[in-house]
Length: 107
Length: 107
DNA sequence: TCTATTGTTTGACAACAATCAAACTATATG
DNA sequence: CATATAGTTTGATTGTTGTCAAACAATAGA
Image 1: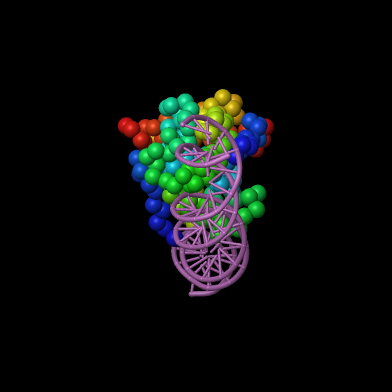
Image 2: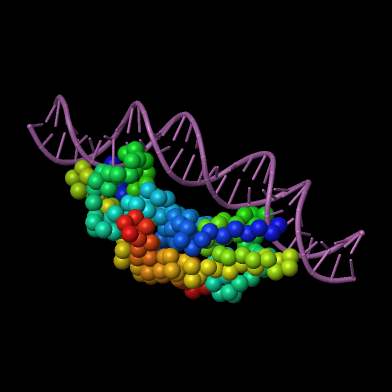
């Protein structure tokens, strides 16, 4: 329950980022992360109505795609967006997606 | 071989756009369309190394997701990006994706 | 050390997606 | 009209994905 491999910034693939964000649950997670900065998994899972193992799966997909960074704080895992890395690799992409997701969620 | 339904601009869904563009073949099609403006299917299929029926499938996915607009010109189908529609719905998204795809392809 | 808490892993299953091949449809043109 | 051309549709196959449930692992705290 310790290793959390992340892809290097230059190894982040556009198609994998897009695929990771094409799932409604994962897009919701990212949108929420964009608002709160970083948060523990369970807090984020609230309201998604999804099983905890499914949630764990989604977090792994996001991390392995290079969308999020995760670290252990005690026994809780804290995730945050890799904003700078994504911005340097695909300028404007993350912001555009977050804007689109948020305008859909509460507009 | 005539009906080509397109979603209305306001019905274009972010997750469907992202899913459509998360496939390497479709992303390549979109990148190419971004360069040449509009083009017939077979011309675009060149170099993708994919069967014509598979190509037809990809075009339908792109069209149904609201990414492309297709029209018949004689017996050839011409596709183009729905730049304005996508820009009004998800500002900056398409450009960011195209930039990312092109910088990967020939940089 | 025992226990409660957090999250992961594995297995199973159903739904979906990409691909090809072959048959089909529609259109342009000789 | 006959034929070649341009795409589509259908069927089969193969691989991927989202989901849950149950078992597991690791850590914090009493």
